[in-house]
Length: 176
Image (tube, rainbow, N blue to C red; front, side, top):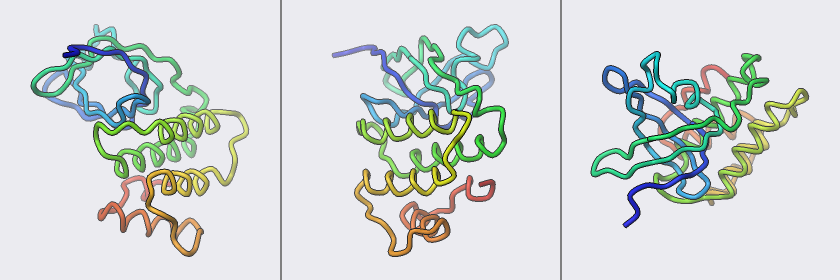
């Protein structure tokens, strides 16, 4: 049995966990969406601290445990620094990550969704991001996951359709 593995992934979500730990949701190319524990990452002396930021493309070493799998090593491959300088782009990146987090199942590989998310973040990080990026991302994600599309393809119809699928409102809807 494999006790550890290395993979690339995009940090979708992070929550503080106990005094110095953080629970991360990372979408990986080879394992899909994973919930992983980063021990002591909130300590100022942590070597992993700056590498596991929201929206970052990371290379991680994961150790399997009986409970939550642990991140033992982390390296930021791309932190999308240009994207982080613009509040509107941060909002859009948050929406993309929330959609992937809510619409995908845990531990199910989906290379196409990973590629869509990564390419969308790369495009969002470029100096000239497309104005239609949100609608394009939502349509493609729904198609890749087999949900189909609503009859109307405007922003409001897509949001309502996605909220119906997830059966809960999107947090990012309030900020985008």
